[in-house]
Each structure stands twice: as structure tokens, then as C-alpha cells.
Length: 180
Image (cartoon, rainbow, N blue to C red; front, side, top):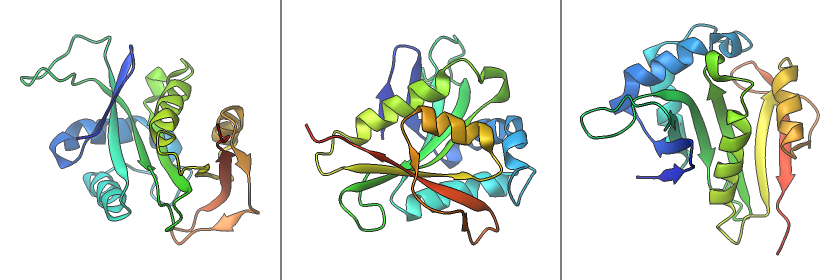
């Protein structure tokens, strides 16, 4: 199981076993979902995202708030405040590429720096692989707030707007990893 630890958050690979908690995150992020083809969260949507992540050799992770004392019977924090999905390497069969495909933080926890901390934590994990030279992402052209966030995180637009099979139009983004 993949786990990243930060003093405030844990990023833990998750799946169907956390379906109801994940659905809660998706429902709290419907303002983001309304920008795309499916504006309402559903169990089917969450399960499809998990399936696609695994099919693409990616990691679908819950973002857990360690500052909450709401533990389940296994001692794991139940407070999922977001999801992050990424392909840590070999994106599009290129050993130098990784892809950060989804980041959602529940509305009540946004504008607190959580997204930036999560992205940096994921980037640190990805770049432990010495072959990684680029981390790619994509953002819908109608999501100006997200585009500004990714640009603040060092990602640059690397394509003209591109129509995706799901009928969304996105900018492809890229962050170059300096060679040390």
C-alpha cells in the first residue's frame, strides 16, 4: 500500500473499501464537477476513477487530515478531505514522465494551502525516481482558478486547448524537474 506522510496529512492509496467516504468528497466537490460532463457525484463515478487509475498504473489516494481524532477500528483516520490521483512514472510509456491527473479538496478545506502541500508531497515522491524529468497535468480551460493554482505550483501550459474524449477541453501542463 502506498502511503505518504506529512505532519498534517497522510496520502494513502485507497479504493472501493473507502467508497462512501470518497463519495462524500466527490459530493463536496460538485462545484468542480459541474465544469465537466458529469456535474453530479455518484458511486459509479468514483468507482470508474479508481478503475481508470489502476488501469493506467496510477495511484488513487485519499488525503487524510491527521489533525482530526476520528479514527476507525484499524487506527486509521477516517477524515478524508480530498483525493489525489497520479501516475508516478512511465506516463505514455515514457520513463521520464509522470502525470498528476486529479486533485480535489473538499470545499470547506480549500484556500488553506492543503492543495499545495499535497502537490509538493506527491512531487517529492515522484521525483525519487531518478528517471523523472517532467510531471504533466491537465486543467479544464473553463477552470481559471485551477489553472492559476497549477501555474503557481510551477506548471506551464504546453499545448493549445485540447478536446478530450469526455467532451472537456483542457490545457496540458508540464513541470520540468531540474537535474541534480
